[in-house]
Length: 348
Ligand code: GLY
Image (tube, rainbow, N blue to C red; front, top):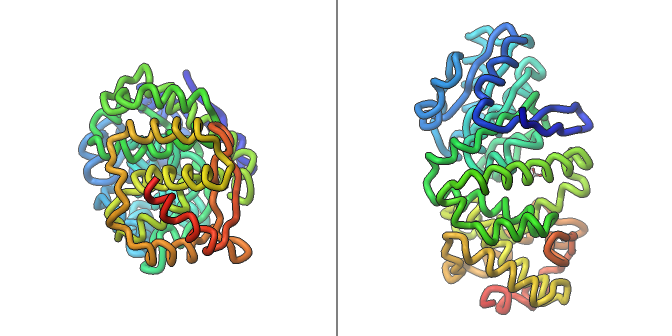
């Protein structure tokens, strides 16, 4: 049995890997009076039959991460008689994981839940670490909690049903782990980007495992995102601004990849990153199936989004910039600094 233990300060839990996770979830569920799977309709149709429990299906898509869905889930769970001896199983991508995690954290003041992430981005990032959330008209993930799952179960073979765009979405986070933490991982992914689109599990499964190991270590050191965990925000400052300025037409990982390109260039212009490392980062990013064009982004809207970024501190914009491949640090910049480098950062 392949597993990693996450030693989160609020409690340790296991992350299990492999095709036999479906049996392991069932084994765990035997310790509870009842279990319920919450999934989205697409994922439920593909994988729901692998678990012998009732399923609560949700509409797919980011619009489901709302107060209304929480209220509906709470009603559903209460009608089914879920209590503190029940287990909720979040089967799906980031939307399902965030929503179920948040609802589990408040329903009856907290009940047990596990994650079975079914997208690349959820397997390497969202499914691990206990960040939950919903969106409101005023912001993405504006309401959320830190609530670690009782376990995470990852079967990389389910990624075979994902479209290329979803693989690109996850590759943003995968390359990010390499750039901020692990040069060897970076080189493996850089040399095998095609293996992700072809789902060559010999390459992909160990990469997912390594990303999860890195995330687990970071969460153990800084569960509540006050210090070290913030390095996971590399690419996210420009990335969030891109998502916002482009009216959310890019998915999160696409925006992170574009953000990593801009933040890599910014780090180089600031004298923090060597030309060779920037060239390697650009090479890796350009192997991913993504159009890195910035012509549709309005500078004013981007700057306004940067000014309102929730990570900002002391009136400055917070960037996590690479110092070399495998090491990144927070750099606080003024709006004037960003404007000074703007043209070169965008044009490359
Ligand atoms: N997605 C970044 C984190 O979990 O901290």
